[in-house]
Length: 377
View 1 (cartoon, rainbow, N blue to C red):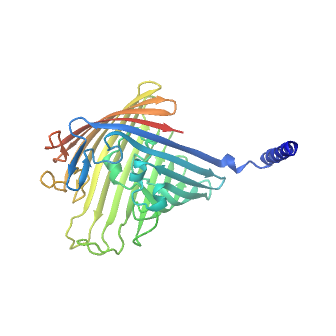
View 2 (cartoon, rainbow, N blue to C red; view 1 turned 180 degrees about the vertical axis):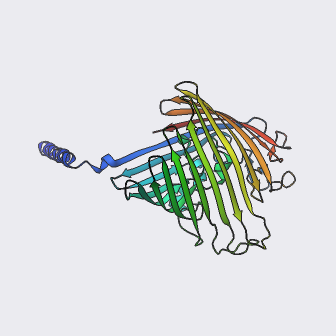
């Protein structure tokens, strides 16, 4: 039996090597990558948690993700992709609190799906993508491996996270590109619940030193759904966004993002149009081969009853409405192989009493510290 087994193994091995010489195995086109992250967070001039009638509230900036106190989990991100000569597919799965916050409009088994799409390279200059992909708007992304700062900006947090639909990418020449897309309403990634669609467009210019993208998103967000106070066919969203970033020297990088987002409501509605606008700089300097230092100043202003800045949920302090916040985030990136440690200081200063101090009195500013660890593979 041992001799027979050995002969079978030798026979199978010979066949596999022969097939690889004639036609490379499909395994060579299969890629696996991802990341794991965790962090520690504490407030410098406020309590971390307090109790309201509706339950516990964690005092943190109004942006997404790094907002839980103490030692906390980010997410495990696993990306499986197949890259054929003309066609391919990507399955991007997320597990953990950061992933749950990123795919908040998904349910059931698909609540772990961050991206899931197939693509077809129609020609050297045209690619069609069908499925669910992360947004093309904004400077930052969901995965912490692609962001210099661990905490995210207000503009990224309240823009779209993902889209489901079909898009066409065009390489116009060596520098210019364009994209057109038809999608479900923003962040409805599993299916279309209301029969309305959004349209997206992008024009890009890139060089070896960096890139610039102008993005547009427009579409009805709730179809014929009738909501109390809004009437029928409410919720037409429009967002225009400019993102750019360039290596100005071998050690200094400067990026910029500005955006305007508004959701218009029909005439006769009991509510005003709601939305936000803002801008942010991303300045980063390489101090050494293993250490970089970066700062992100951001101005963010909301109008209508948008409610992004209000963290107290108490009308005696601040009633949702027109308000703005200026947030400065200073981050370091310490690279240890595939592991990046990110110590971060952040100060958010609002125009209204949007935060609490240690005595549970309202205040306009919140200082916080984060230490994150991000491993990519």
